[in-house]
Image (cartoon, rainbow, N blue to C red):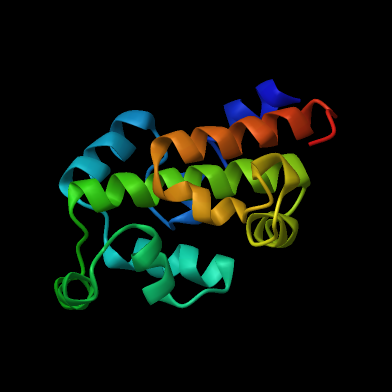
Length: 146
């Protein structure tokens, strides 16, 4: 099942769909992240996670004044886009492993014993934290209690 979960990240239900982006080919996604994702991508994942956009901005490490500028220019920086894509990738993986976006949202927002009792979403601000969350999801996909 982990192979299925990993394979689906590039296809239907993957990060591109979560962020409501047009293309889902890796080369297209790379170019979009390097250029900067549209602010609407941040709004899309905020809606799916049922969180205020400002909370997503804080999770991505965007200061409030910069966040206000991004809202006006409607474009994120490449670094912010990369962090947003990482969040979307993990959300898509959670939805695939757990079977629905509702369960994924609930799992990402609930304390998890495998993550020292912390909320998985709070671990997604760094690459190492994201990898740990994805590792827990992979264990779940194999049926290993986490």
